[in-house]
View 1 (tube, rainbow, N blue to C red):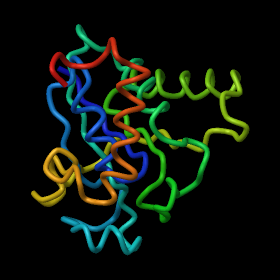
View 2 (tube, rainbow, N blue to C red):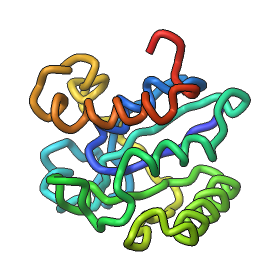
View 3 (tube, one colour):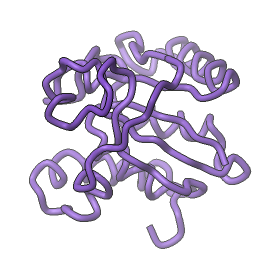
View 4 (tube, helix red, strand yellow):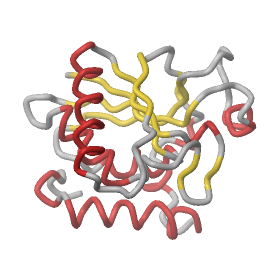
Length: 178
């Protein structure tokens, strides 16, 4: 198994998408990249801890590759907006790949370079590539948030369209029954 940690806006969105991806064993919402020990959601949302809302994705590289994880990651969020995803604004929502191995770092940097060269977006990619630091699991109520709260307004209007986009664009990469 391999692990990567990704930030691309609200962790509920990323968790909901990666939970449905074939080869992904677990997705845990949490915080990474800050300077405060054991941050909580309110502190992270204040922007004062330096943490990012992230998901820690554990996957089987024999089933899905890190490159495929990145392909989905870049398809479901806007990697060109600094510290913002839609109406979610602040450093805790920045686009970042926290690599766990030198190979992940290289693959992430190569992927970003390739996407920039392809000019898929009109603006350059601002996704940061950083070494993984201490991961702090988010509070229990954040785990499986979309699955547990599909009719909550944020889930209905923000998370659900990202899940639908994943299902439409990456149908072959979906878990059976997802």
